[in-house]
Image (cartoon, rainbow, N blue to C red):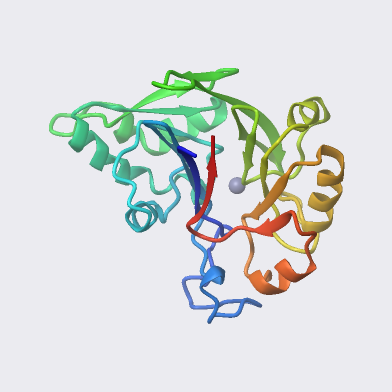
Length: 258
Ligand SMILES: [Zn+2]
């Protein structure tokens, strides 16, 4: 098992607890209920890929001892997935070259207008990032097995967000309210299905528990991991009612795979 997928953050947009200390229905004494904003990291042989730059990015990388990043894949432009972007400056300073980031058209437009200083040179402030438009498939050459990441564009309420299929074995969709029918067939042989499951009740921009449970009856992944969890969802209480191959995510959760 040389490869590792880490859930850096498993919480919804305001995290648990919120900035005002509110834990909602979560037991504050359970460390697994302490959730930062959704963000993930993939270590595949020597390749290090970040998915999103949450506002908690700095503490997430420090806590998980991630010292190198080769590129960033963005899911969408919402604040909870992008506002840690400025901390990527550390990698420009370390490598003396711009870090490649990948985004779909809308996310690209938003990032380049909101965080233009990251992408354009100014006297004394060199650009730290290089923007790339998401391709149908992104290939990474590795010393051992190659890595292929396929972006799957899914509905996320009023917008669309990218989710990512890694070597056809791991799916990561932290912000999804519907995976389109045309893509469902690509998800039939998954080892790990990491999916948005905001809360028990319906939400227009995210899957809820009932919707996820119906979805996994169709695609039958070996293991499902629920992420983007709201403060109304307590880790232990949720775990108790889930089928045994479905588990809630928590910050720092690691998946090892070949
Ligand atoms: Zn979002």
